Image 1: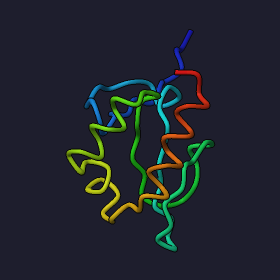
Image 2: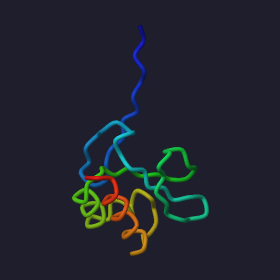
Image 3: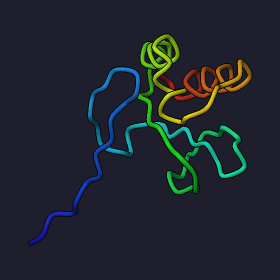
Image 4: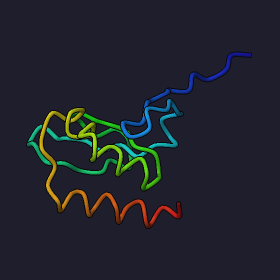
Length: 90
C-alpha cells in the first residue's frame, strides 16, 4: 500500500520544517497585495509561518517575511497576521 506524500514547508520565523497543513501561508498576489491564504492554493509568491507569535515576531524582526515575499509589509498586514494568530487558539 502506497503512503500519500505529505508536502513539507519551512517556517520563515523559526526555520523549522513542518507539514504544509500545520502552517499559515502568507501570499503576495500578482496584484502585489499581501493576503493570508487559508486554502494554500492562491496564486502568487508564498511564505509560511507557524501558528505562534514568536515565529511571527522573528519573521518581522529579521525581515525574513519581507525577503521571502520580495516586498515591504505594511503595519496593517502585520496587525492582520497577529489577529489571525490570536484566533487560531495558539
